[in-house]
Length: 220
Length: 298
Image (cartoon, rainbow over all chains, first blue to last red):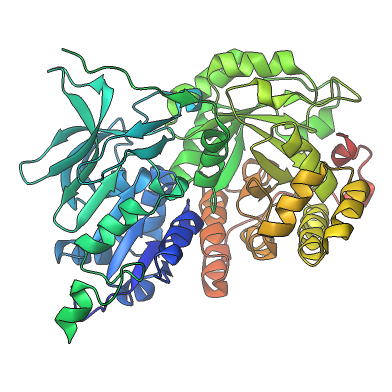
């Protein structure tokens, strides 16, 4: 927890599936703040980076004067949850991106954009996720995959049938400390378990849990 | 050993509407060459619409407007990483099949092209590729959704640079949605009859208070303030056709409209991006145009 910024959850609202993330978070008793300016960013303690178009968000992060403050906050340990385009923004390396595409380098992974082809190849599937008892129904839309993970990155889910040259399934859900990234769109699945996972990892209180959470107890 | 392939479902409602959700808050730009497509992507467009002539030129030159040459669409697809959309004529399912075969990301069954069928729209459920369709009112929008459209755009009057039709259509669609959310269960049937729309969709609308698919705005957006206007009225993203490449400085107009669409509630920001922008497309007042493209579609 970062006491100076409090526990408010922001959603980067430059473009994309902002409303869907907000709905999932509201269902968990969290009222998120839309982040479009450096002042908005100052008011939040953790950030969700939604699905959308990563090239567009990359342009808007720069024109909205958010690149430097976002990079600083992430370097300072701000918890972040990036889905699809949000994962691309948080990655340390983008393959098949534009040469001028800026990323925030919050997690040491190399991500390949549009790894499955065009929109007609977008799909839904059930995914086994480490730590979840039941599979997660995942929606992949013009989705990226992770082609390399750094030593401090945990792989929480991989996509069977999508193997790297060594025959291992490629990662689609990764975590480094309080930074969680998904190649798919948990905001479209009407299933809050990955948002819960993020909030818990960020030390945030979740209303759906009975009684005070660890974070609330710690503050007392 | 390769891991087994899990079951994957393509072309579902969720996948089709999902891409539209990902484009929300963005600008989709009409482009006629690969160079223009690059300009659009550089400016932060969320997608491009590949076509041979922008609506303003279709209007001026006349003749039958058809699907673009596949070579043009492929040339544009080759230079950008963002989604590429292309237009098929209303009811021309064979053009739509060609566009799907070319791997476009969205098909626009568009009134800007000359309609191929005077009674029927394309059965869009039959396709894996998602469709966007235009609408001037809520009934038309829901009929298109019932045929399988995964995104609706208010039509406006394409190629005029005059925003008033876009405003009329948005207000009509969103105003009726607001009224339906107040309707009792008996009135829902009357609404369905009046709108000539499936009662199931009207009931869904009454419960959720919003369109079942994203509602974008098209037809007449020519300035950053136009984009801010339609976004404040309730559009979820903007299509800009002639407004960018018929302006005096397309790269700057493109970037300014992208920024105004994101920061539509922030008048200081809209002012900043509008300052010294140069000349917007000259345009034509809607009441003076001979062909109302928005009247096409049934």
